[in-house]
Image 1 (tube, rainbow, N blue to C red):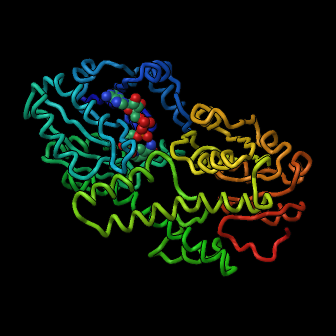
Image 2: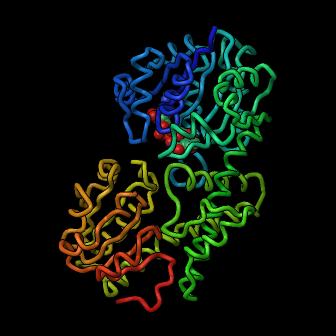
Image 3: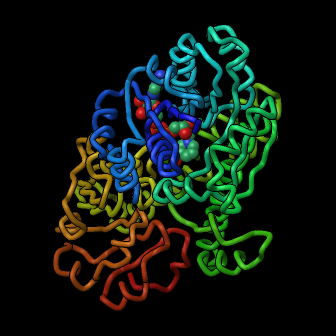
Length: 445
Ligand code: NAD
């Protein structure tokens, strides 16, 4: 009989994973403690913005392959495989990961496990967590040794989550037995037939692959942002520099774009959690490296604020600033640790009136920062502005017409925090155009 799957935690990762497992033909039950989320998903709707996910959920819910519940007892009775997809945010007031959702889910699930099953961790956790969960499950589960744990880190990118889940770059599984590996191969048979590389390893290595991958990506981004400071001071062009570097196959083009840096619910908290874990392990070099990566990233935000202040004549107080973007990246409504919002909030605290427009994230941003102003479109956000800031790289912003905006702003000034707009187009329309890290020397005032 086909394996039956549960997905515990139906946020950005879990809802996508549940829908994609159902799309691959499995019977799937999603479990969440959030009743509102469960109700929305059960109606075939998605409680957040993720391209292509709504169709997938809708289809699989109506086909009866995908259901949602708040009952862990129901999940335990239903599933042969339980994917653990709960959140692992940064611990408030510290660098480490807050594992309370992981421990909570295991404590709730464990006592209901009466028969043979595989629990598969997908959440990003500090190295060593899985081994501790093996012991915890052994204590809690009535089925004892028939309950096994495996780790299968997730590498999906928000904005491309469906594509990345259905056709990932690679599948990494950490297991403690050949049976667990066999079950995971069966679960991912669609992907394996499609030629996706499958890397089977131990629990600890699997946990560490994810943390190392995010640390590397963060380092790459901070490297190019550190280079952009050199470019600013010397008159070099960081976009052309990155373009030239990217042709080197050992370096590659992706994650080499200078700008406002990284944010979101993964990279910042993952590198901080790794710093905390490396400190416990006494690996000081990793702590020093990632601490510098984090500082360079946060410095990009202060450089953006400095540039905005400079464009406002040295003081933003009393100025009206239109902000394009609130999400931490385009194609997402996720505002967790968003660089755009952190800059917007700081400018407001320095006395500016800030009006934001994001194609998908206005509601989430407003829930977090109700004192900022929100507009229904880019033109409204720009209305009466002394300065415009481009902070999230949506296609919609690249397509904006500077001639049209000229008619609504107070002053034709824009700062591109993502090195993504067409500078020539804006300058030809008479705008003062500045970009974070780009060569700004000799440009119109
Ligand atoms: P999220 O906060 O969107 O989702 C977590 C969900 O778990 C929430 O819906 C929450 O209500 C639910 N939950 C909490 N405790 C629960 C419990 N005891 N039982 C059932 N449900 C419970 O987080 P996310 O962005 O989906 O991330 C989840 C994990 O995946 C994190 O470890 C993250 O680092 C990792 N990850 C996320 C992404 C991403 O792009 N979002 C990518 C790769 C890995």
